[in-house]
Length: 468
Image (tube, rainbow, N blue to C red; front, side, top):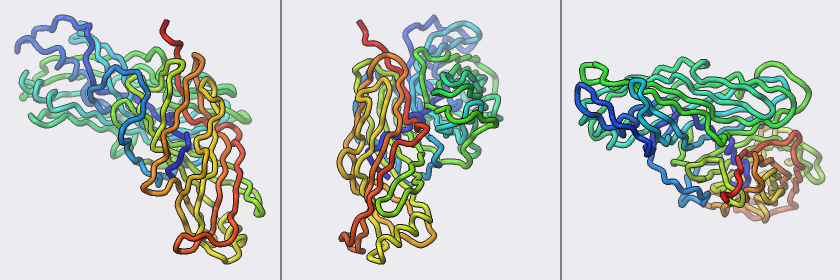
């Protein structure tokens, strides 16, 4: 459903493995090889070529969080389990590069990666991030430059790719430990970009990440390390580079996990695989599943599952903002799922007037810490959604807004310094029986859905003090 919900699981957003974007200024003199003086820029690019995880594309240094022009439509038909969050993020990470053990400079790395994980677990349970996919694309100019230097092949090996669960947990897991990662030889073709994908055929996983006591845990990017060997046409190594991307400071958060309820054991992961959703540089898309207990006037109280999706174009700092900065979300979409039991009761309630019902979202609220306002209306006035047919014994999925319409962007303001979180609040919607021509018939059925407990996280962010 396309709606003004903030279940922008920008949590979801989790970037790990990287591809180069721009080269820093702290470069040392290039080393001399038997085939001449190499280009440090080319070496730095090669050092970050292809290993799991991002779209490498030039990015600026702007720290604004403005609305992107013409954001992608990520669709509303992706079924998200009620206890799941899925996201893809393109973030900028700072890395250092060495050639043959000699420091060669720094690089700002643009990383794209995505996965799915639970929203809520019990204290003592461990969780997994699953359905991980990643991609790197380097421009034709890089291919041509390397080719001119005699390079024909690149062998890349991922040595380390860590994520951390902090807050309500203190755990680290490595993507390399949980997967058999083999990156095929990259053959350079003049005039063609360098594209490397991981997880397309067999999605990767990361874990287990152990929780401790109740509280709020945050998934954050850890250290990443890769090795790249550049070869000539005969397969003779020309040079080897090592790229180390230390744990970002300030933290680069990827998701919030609520640790709540009675103590539990075992491991929690979301089953199934989900399609990759690639995003532009320095942006994020996320979806959050949820379950409400909704009261339907004159009918009763029923569980209603659903999800919401949002897109954000935040700039190269990702989910790190300055106090007072506006945080925009756009391309909001949402959906609800009426269970077979609820569909039967609705059919009885409308009294045979019509088995077609049209969804209208009346309001959607979120609450937050370290963002302003503390309670926000994501949908403050009625938004018309789709129409569906009620059938006895069958579920019905409805979405909003209607196809071809877009809700206006929504923004929060970064508040006091610290780690901020947004949480799903209450919502209300109306189901109106309609004719095949879309005309209302009979009385509408109104539903009110209190804030779910435990709280369902939407997204985290780091808020820094304003520069003095």
